[in-house]
Length: 275
Image 1 (cartoon, one colour):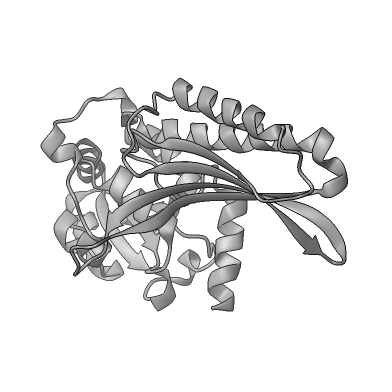
Image 2 (cartoon, one colour):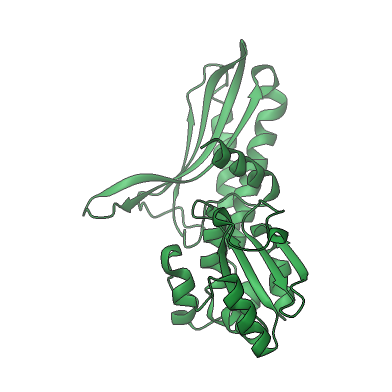
């Protein structure tokens, strides 16, 4: 568990986005829940206006009540005997629970900041604005058409679960088998290093690698290989970078690493390499 938390912290510093996904969010209501006695209620309307302006910019319908809520929560906290203000921007959605006909409220996005109670006047609105900008940037990125190509809906929305990703996508899972296959084909190997608990790996699978056009480009240039980092069933040269996802392009003749792409934030570099 400690290693898992450490990895998440490392990822949070490396990734431009959170590991939450905002794809397909079309409507929500906006709420400001100011539960802190240290924050004047006059800020509520100002914060609400900021969130509404951001939401209009990204095309959110705020008229329909679908049960989805974007809420900004302000609460008083105590940190090392000092009073502070915790700011949470959360997206709450009613989603079906597997194996049940019941829908449950789930938090599908959260961003948290903390400021000193003495800095409310100077920092509160600036902090909320930064959080709104981060939300908007991720929303735009999660909902944009990759590579500016409008793919066929059936292909672009292919659903592949992590558990059967390699099988469904036709990826090799054995390093040596992939190398031999690549040598015969005269191609490099594209090794996708993942773990079972990596949320950014799931985003790489669902938003990048499973797209029909991207998958076709990968297989045209490379022999794709999926490896679980925790199993270490591959050469030590691939052990050095512990961040996942990591993608290596490997010469199948010399087994020399030609290119390395670290983290979900490197996705645009991967797409450029495929062109």
